[in-house]
Image (tube, rainbow, N blue to C red; front, side, top):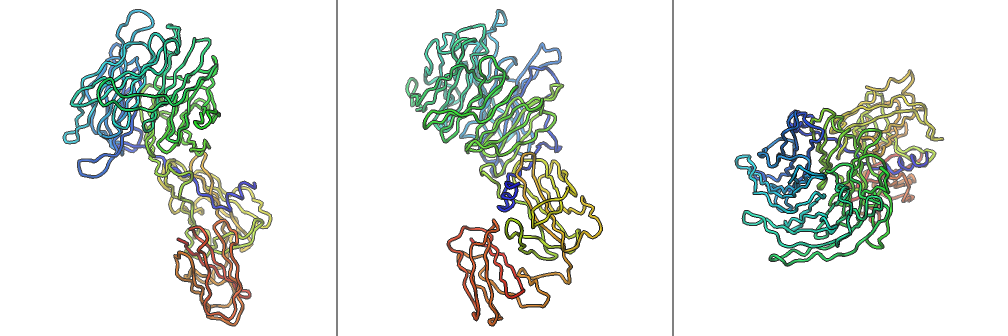
Length: 623
């Protein structure tokens, strides 16, 4: 209860996400029709580029893997979309094998170019099958909405896992464990219409990866890159005696072939662990720009996983969260970590800030919450790809305009034009109370500014002297799949009993945006309205009194309070947004007095003037 009160006293700003489902019909976008349980889709979010009309735009891309109903034929293609979920172009099929891994990434310097890493079976005989790893370039031609493909470039020729990242200069760094257990990173550059192999960097020596060839899928490797810093992690040892080798390095781009370097910064060895890889499309490693390394791991043969952070300052490790089943990690450019994980049989999406604090849980559409196959994030956009139980592929795009902040900048507000706002004593000190004439006047604006899909409202009576609440008069979701909840009228949900509008009753409204969102609390009451109030500064005595001008408002420091009655003594009190009195002064015989807010933070302050049995308040904005 105390924490709830603290939240109320601080008028806590909250992460109030607006959930967005993008396509032309307003629902989830279907990528492909039902086919095979091995078919999946992988997404990528592009940097800002210029649209044909000259406006800035962010494209995103989906690589789809699909097969015929018989399973005898299979294909992959690339689709480009506008940020609103509008399909722009579809490539011709670039692969005819769906069993190997696929990953796509946008060129960091060109928002119309996507690179794909993919694997195809070199031989279908023997066990395990041998795969070849290729890269290919796709460029969106916005003049005719077509996709141009490069020739494929052969990188590796093993059945082991492969991964790649793209350096700030556009070089592709493709990694894979070799048959001898070494891990090679190849630097590849696309220029003048073709790929060039620049150099090969050996980051792990022979014998440092899994040695049992029959467990080829456990030679798992995962990579991430922020700036010129790269993180590489792979499983090490034997299947029954496993560990994780994790390294960071700085990429020095070659000027010509056989130059450049990838000097290592540090390496870690975690015994008794293996990288979590419940699905071949999942990312197990994330690198924060601040240097933190996050990785998903399993212990021994246990299917339970942990999300672990490695602190680069002292190389210590800590567990952020844990779970069981499938999980997928994505780390943004602003140090936020997003985790798609299975909870009670369905996927949820969780956000952790740069201090590893869980800030929000996002709900996923029911079509894909049982089968998230890929997750990617760029800036404040989150793209999730998944499929229904009939294997129909879908994707969802979240637009999170304020995910850069630890807290959002929007809070629920009362629109209070009918009557006034007062400051009343409570068990926890003076608090603002909105005053109305009747229930139909009460209006709440719970507009949000990030990613979520529901707004919950609850209203109950409250005793301010003891801060105890009565049973809820209403508690339920009032807005689903909404971008905002404007002009909420509680009277549409609450059916008060007779006598509800007596002055002795106070009410507490609680507005929560999205599951896991922080609630915002508002107090209100009803009083006998003799007349509508029009001035921002209100008189609360029975006799009329001239208003007290306060200027300038907004102010950068000093505000002037002007009095017309200079004979009576007045007390000026200033309260901050926490309801704490920060300043008090006595005034008598002065036409004007100064109130200096210069040393206080920017924000909204309440100035209360008490003269005898009269009390007046004014809101002042400190810039």
